[in-house]
Amino acid sequence: MATISNLAYVHPEAKLADDIIVDAFAYIDKGVVIGSGCHIHPHSSVLEGTIIGQNNEIYEGAVVGATPQDFRWKGDLSYVEIGDNNKIREQVIINRSIHKNGKTIVGNNSFIMAQSHIGHDSQIGDYCVLGNAVKIAGDVIIGNYSILSSHALVHENCHIGEWVLIKGGCRVNGNVPPFVVMAHNPIEYFGVNAYVLKKGNKSDEIIDDIAKCYRHVYQTGTSVFNAIRRIHEDVDQSEERDQILDFIKDHDLRLAALPFADQDD
Image (cartoon, rainbow, N blue to C red; front, side, top):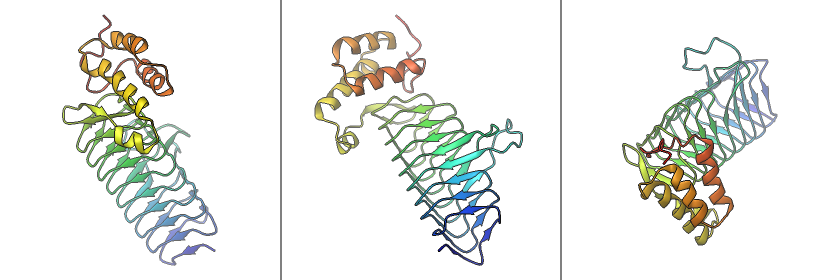
């Protein structure tokens, strides 16, 4: 049986699972869908267009489904879609899409810490961590198992690959390929995310090959075109190697921390 405080506001057209908890002074808007096992803490707001899966916890002062902070939004109904088993901490803001029927998406098993902001049409993968006060602009993609430390800032239209660690306070102004650590301002390549990759059961051999790929990309001073060619010649084929190559090719070589990314010689 649902436990809903008589001091909470729940719109009669909201669809709530039978076993959720809604605390005092929470606000649940028209058309909201909340799945089984969720807990909505005091003073949090779940606004129209929000669809929430199972076993999520939304803490005090969070606003999920806020209208987009973008002049291109013309008032059309759009969505925020939250998966399962996420923790959304205090004062987090997650904006809806700017497009009619579009979605801002948070996957499964992620931890979004206090005062973080996820902009319109962004996509957060599974098992991600956003540290305190991380700011994600619109149309950003963050791959599975990635960690953004506190106060990281991600500019619009950036794509961060899987298994990435962004150090605290970094300003991400380009695409970040998978398996790396990025640090400092201006942002720069800081190495391979070896510790987390080992926790994810990646072998030492695979981690060494990932490091070899990025020595060609970031540390030889050659063009990205030549780096790709050298990776094909020098690194044994693997799922991880191909993931790195596909990411670079699919993103027009526009990588963060790579001033020579537009060269082709």
